[in-house]
Image (cartoon, rainbow, N blue to C red; front, side):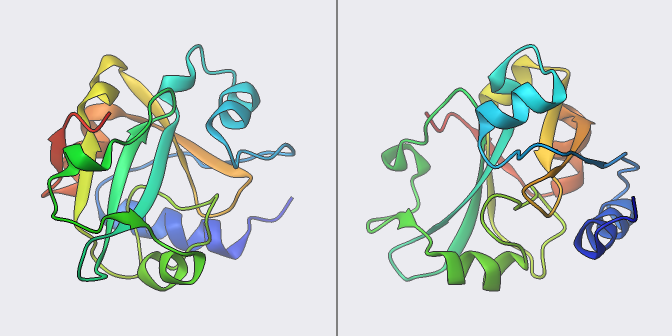
Length: 156
């Protein structure tokens, strides 16, 4: 099966960040953490990285990478008042990807990124790779290092 062009674009961007990963395009949807865990055979739904785009009180988008078994507590983000989920058009504009396929990095523009420290429970995590059916495994510490200026903290 030929590779989806969005997946190919993301793989190139990941290589530029020093991540040589193998993207898997699956027959089943990986739009939710539970679906992704089942599709890849992950032992724990927490190994699935949810890439969630929020806006702060000024409307500026930022990314939160959260373990699949946790929920983001917006009060813990400490980015000011008025934090809310970004609408789909803002997600696509900020990242270049649609909700359900947003990867943790490799976006169209640099986004402030907060990483759920609980992801460090796992040696390897699974991330969206640009489409709702594409994922890639990556060593957790390699992912955090590739983000560069990630703000790692408790978000749940």
